[in-house]
Length: 152
Image 1 (tube, rainbow, N blue to C red):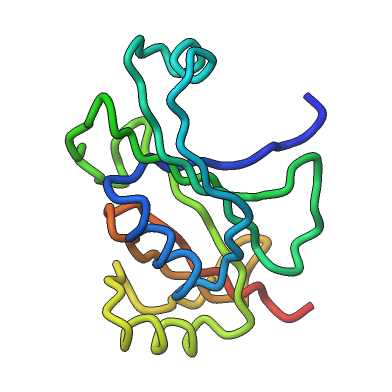
Image 2 (cartoon, rainbow, N blue to C red; image 1 turned 180 degrees about the vertical axis):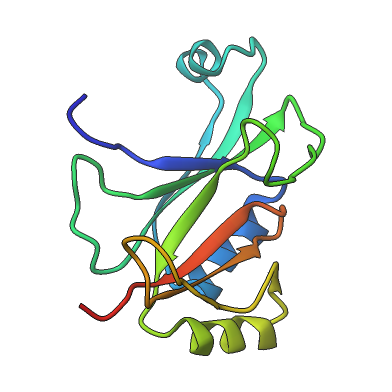
């Protein structure tokens, strides 16, 4: 392994998700494309696949081997049904985002209608003791986390 290329979420509505990650969370939209080709069909393992893709980056994040950090994928064909998004199920994932002030971000995002699992919780044990963290949900109920690292 040489590095991480990106992290990806499959979403129901690409435009809605781009607006959420770009406009509310501050990601930069790097690239959008429709993928309706043999390569994509072989890659994803669906012989009739048609995808809409958006690639986003966290501003100021050092670029590694890729131009983006997060890829959002909408399967136009085959359409998928929402799955149980429960965090305790095997295969569930989340993306943690660092912030300067978890309480301020919680208040800002709550005012914008974002659903939170909890308010920011003080981290009281482990290497990040003294920081704050909370889970929240994107429009597809994908779990995201705000992390305010402790002062060091």
